[in-house]
Image 1: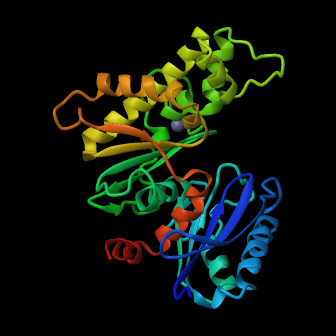
Image 2: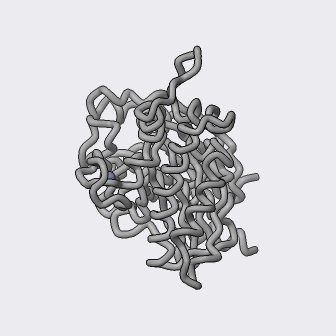
Length: 316
Ligand SMILES: [Zn+2]
């Protein structure tokens, strides 16, 4: 018998996932539907309400005591609003209020997707047991989050740890955010793949020019593909080192599709981290792959909704 459950929502540009999660991170019920990302805001909200309706109609719903939302950003957790870059119909959209209406007034917690992934890794993944961690998601963008002093540190608006928009190349290429030389502008999957193409790498017969295809070429020894991953790794390492100098970290955890490249990314990442993190208090920093995979968003939303409770349960 599950006495206390949390409902989790993971909202991204391609799908809206929902789940009921128990106190040990077990996912008991799950559902998802595509995000109608090109439609107006109300249409997107109806998709969210559809996911919630499936959860609230089930026999376990009366055991749900709180709702956690991890959303593509930027989010404004203080105001309960979201403005996801890849969902144009939502600008300052009052998501928390709308969800609260659909869940009979249960408490609703909102965090950005990078913070959600961090909460998941701290609860169930590679950052478990570490009091000071930076977790990164490297995929179509680069996001992240922080655990400081043993607690998730979302910041006032829920965006703290957003390492993708630290500039590591002062005169670098313009970034979508308006700045230049951001970590994301160099290390995200699309930018990493574009760099390989610009340098003369050509996809195989299947025409696949994704970061995963570049990773396969790098693994097979293609020097241009390897150089593209090396450049991405240097950008990530510079951002991780900067963060470690600012707040002191025990561990950095890297997940997302680009991290799926494995040693093609992690070998140059470790090497570059040694080059950029040299002082005594940062040079022992380790960087490891994330463990929570595609459920990170749901687990993290659940963890963010019941952080203190989760910590107590784990200690028990
Ligand atoms: Zn940027």
